[in-house]
Amino acid sequence: MPVAPAELTIEFTVAPGPDDDRTAVRAAVAAAAESGLAHETGPDRVALSGAHDAVIGAVAGVLDACVRAGARGVDLRIEVPTEVRP
Image (cartoon, rainbow, N blue to C red; front, top):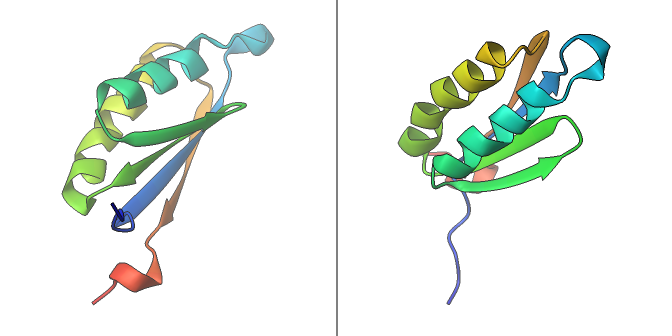
């Protein structure tokens, strides 16, 4: 069964805490998993993909989780595939 392309992908790059503490990265990954959206992880990053409103709604949860866990910074990259633009 074909899957429609994601309407939106947001990638979070999380700057670990002091002394390279990965707690904030793990918190971001856990929050992404809890969102129920398609997600992909890599070193210091997690990406969420799916319907526009669902992805936007999940952003606050991921940001809150990693900042509360001690992230020194978080960069966001937003990708809107051209095939889903009006």
